[in-house]
Length: 258
Ligand SMILES: NC(=O)c1ccc[n+]([C@@H]2O[C@H](COP(=O)([O-])OP(=O)(O)OC[C@H]3O[C@@H](n4cnc5c(N)ncnc54)[C@H](O)[C@@H]3O)[C@@H](O)[C@H]2O)c1
Image 1: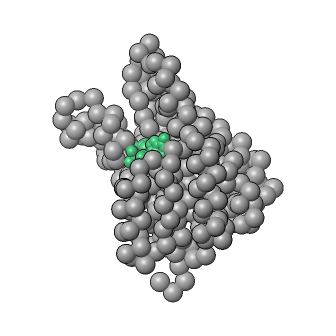
Image 2: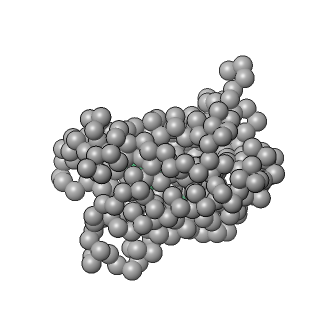
């Protein structure tokens, strides 16, 4: 590509071994960004990194858990050492859990809040000094329709994602004077391992068919739908957009408001 959109830009993507995170990493790399892939398991991260390198991209792997503040700091330090700076942080890692509030153990509550909400906080805090130096810094948080609408039997996940939405808006205000944009996307169902983990019936295909009926456009999303929106929001084309909670859901939020 003669002049790729993200040439000279560096991005960290958390939870980059699968689903939305892996697709975003591939998309930004194809458009010229150098990427750091983080996640708990080294082997699947290396698989995505090798795929990116085979296409001529630059990919660094820093394995670790998003709930570990040392890992967040390490991911930023290694990225800056390898590439000379950091322009984009994408907080994508996440897990979901299902069950009534009475069935939710304290450990399960803590696990979801720690991974889905504390993780983005730790990575934002670690990345902000480098993002300030970059001048074009931005943060993109992968939230969910569950951040803006209540759903029964997924309370800790909804609470964590609502927290991510507020984190996004508070940091957008706080970091605007430094020229750092902070946005979130709020997807409906996207076919990934995480969606498969929410399967409540023996046959996943039937579950998927049901999921389609809850989205007014009649189909569910794919990781590429999220990757396209994220690539736009972290690009200079979105230079005047900050603090948005951007729906990506085939109309699902409208339907759940009925
Ligand atoms: N798939 C959907 O329907 C959907 C809808 C709305 C929001 N989301 C959000 O999208 C994001 C990506 O999920 P996905 O759908 O691609 O599923 P996924 O399971 O493929 O990806 C989640 C990634 O996060 C990583 N991860 C989990 N816990 C971690 C931890 N403690 N430390 C580091 N990495 C960890 C996993 O290894 C995995 O790579 C999540 O934040 C999820 O909440 C997904």
